[in-house]
Amino acid sequence: MLVGSVGCHSYHIDTTVENRTGGTIQLLEVNYPSASFGADSLAAGATFRYRFQVRGNGPLMFEYAASDRRPVKIAGPALTEQQEGRIEIVLLPGGKAEFHQQLTHAEAGTN
Picture 1 (tube, one colour):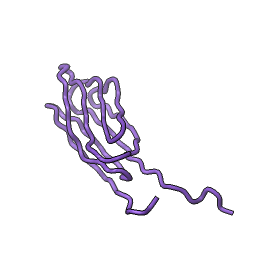
Picture 2: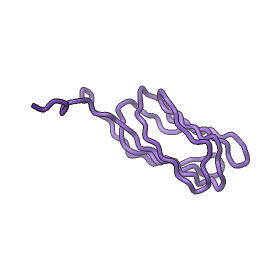
Picture 3: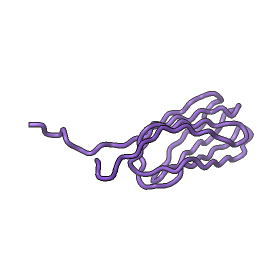
Picture 4: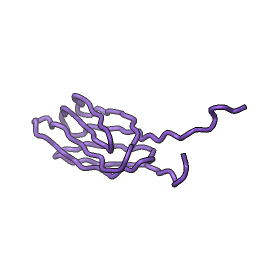
């Protein structure tokens, strides 16, 4: 008997946030549909890793305080429920960012 071998698939997105701004950033907050994550600070050249699950649909949004204490807000890619894969976020000088994503989406009717 194979109890427990059938179940729902859990969809996750593995995320890295790399600070290439040239200075330490403070109060990093990453908002995604239904939740958020972040770090108190991220040193220049450092990488922060986080794994999350999307519930709902909406954009990825970033906020942080630059090394000169200037607030920065960046809109990222749109996400949808049941996406999985990887997103690499590279924070650049001047309040800019690059997004490198490898995401797939489950076909309708699959768990």
